[in-house]
Each structure stands twice: as structure tokens, then as C-alpha cells.
Length: 124
Image (cartoon, rainbow, N blue to C red; front, side, top):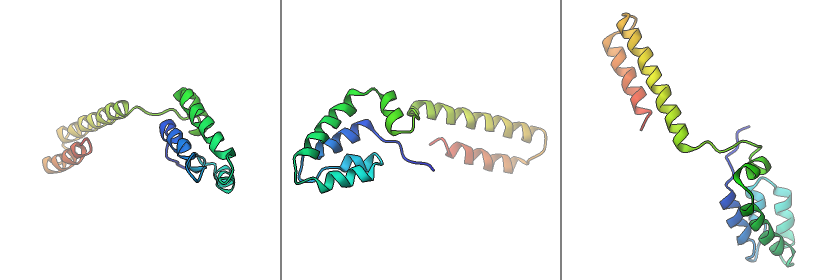
């Protein structure tokens, strides 16, 4: 099951928002609905508000690796620039292979040009 990565900053902001009348938003965001429901049910007391502030500080005090281990199933964030480099590299390799097929006469010039445009459109 694929889940979207959780952000340490967003979790902290939602925890601080728990000082408002209803607490527990950060628990729902982090995939802990039972705790979130408990915070909501206890919102009339100061307990979830204090806990939310403590948790916000805790989230911000953690380094990314620790936060990922706790809330992102240990999966580190893939840097956007690294992803872009990998994508461009894969497309460049595909273009080289496509050109080889054209040079070997296995695909026509028209087929080559169509596929080349499709691959280049993936970069933007």
C-alpha cells in the first residue's frame, strides 16, 4: 500500500493547531486515528492541548531520519533534484536505445520521431 510521505513541519504545525478548541489533527495526519479520536474527545480538557505542544516540539527536535523511521515506515525522503537527475538519465538512455533501433533499421524515422517527442515531453 502506497502512502504519501508525512512532513515533519506539517505535523508540528497541526500539533500546534491543537491548542485551538479541537486537538488531534496531527494524529490523524500521521495515521494514528485512534489517538486522534481520543484527543478530540478530550478536547474539553487541557490534556490534549499540552500534549500537542509537547509533540510539536518533539517533532521539530527530531532529525529527518528519526522522523522518517517513526512516521514514514523508515523510508527516507527522495530529494527532488536527485529524482530529476535519475529521470533525465533514464530518458537519455531510452533515447540512445531508440536511436540504435532507428540506425539498425528496426523502426522507421517517423516512429523514432514520435517516440523521441514522447520521451522528451516527460522531462518537462
